[in-house]
Length: 278
Image (cartoon, rainbow, N blue to C red; front, side, top):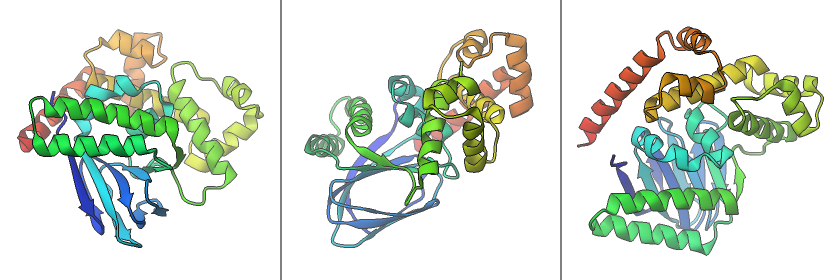
């Protein structure tokens, strides 16, 4: 399936309000980026990844040139989520998929020259539109995201206090271990008392541990229903539900419909979005 990738070189200022994801790399200059969760400053060589459906404003502090990569939400997740599963941070960003979450954006500091060169190559590929250019861009984007996550220091909020840093780490752990996570296991992994883990999660999200586990498992189940053709029994097992009947009950309570109906409606919405793009 074509993911509808676009790679352009632009200048600031720019406003972003898109139904897809946007990735920016600051080739030259400095800028301030206003997001739904606050403002941060980006310098030459920085990159930032933005969630869909939020209003972002990029304002130059000095003359600024950027590369902008836009990619379709539904098709990208269907094609690429399995390739990103080894990186909990990226999985958390794409699975939560909300400008209201703590993952409204990712800010990557200190991007290496090799990553900048990859973006330049992607821009040239997009402009020339040779054979299979969308497939080439998609493979390059996966490589780019994994390189960014591996090689760069990352911020998700501005002036984040230590408790916020712990919350981010806890949520990343919960997402990557959602099928088997326990409060005791998380406390042992982070060397904190379970009461401390509970308090940090509650203060940072407004939800207790059990609610967050259910939310994450349901989000994972929804993603698998939308972007895979796995049978419900395997999806239930991957999300930590050994009993398929219990999985159906919890899913219906959470989404107000059966897993099969959810998958059907999601595919109908995706077909409609793809028709609008064609």
